[in-house]
Amino acid sequence: MSTEFRFAVNVTPKPGILDPQGRAVEGSLAHLGVEGVSAVRVGRRVELTVTAGNEGAARATVDRLAAELLSNPLIEAFRVELLSATSSTTSGGAGGR
Amino acid sequence: MSTEFRFAVNVTPKPGILDPQGRAVEGSLAHLGVEGVSAVRVGRRVELTVTAGNEGAARATVDRLAAELLSNPLIEAFRVELLSATSSTTSGGAGGR
Image (cartoon, rainbow over all chains, first blue to last red; front, side, top):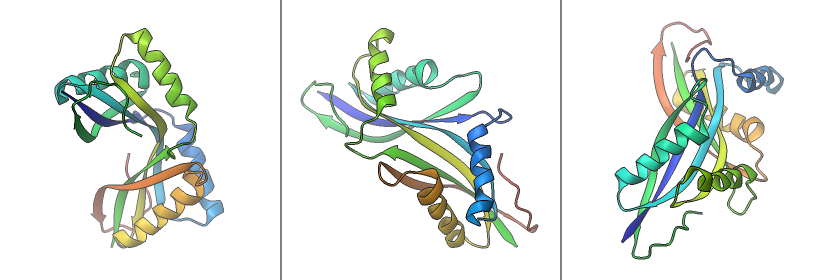
């Protein structure tokens, strides 16, 4: 039996790293008449399904992907979030939405 | 007195919408020797600070920004997440990281 774990990986620019997208959003606020918004940082959110025997194994896979493929460790930080876990009796790899 | 609310807006491609970045990640998995990963979806995560008198007013601002500036409602869904709330006695707009 295996379990399908749905994870999110949140990738954000490290503090102090220039964030041109965040600045662009801040520059648009005045045009929209929005006040009181600051410190905008734009990153990525990657959601994925991992089929594994237990949560530890699934997390190890996600941590490796996040560090090696989904983020640039020089300028970005990432945080892994478990969204759901669904047990199944099949061993197929497809899942999620 | 005002409060600084730190929010995250998670923007993801709607189900059924083509996600080329997600497909690119899936295509890289074999090269990394990673198995059991599927249903990869790549979106954005925007973190921002809103200075407002109460949480309702802050959320209204974020909801408007998410719908009008941070997402394309035709092809993307968004979800707002409150990260923290910090009270202060000053009325300045800067905050967060």
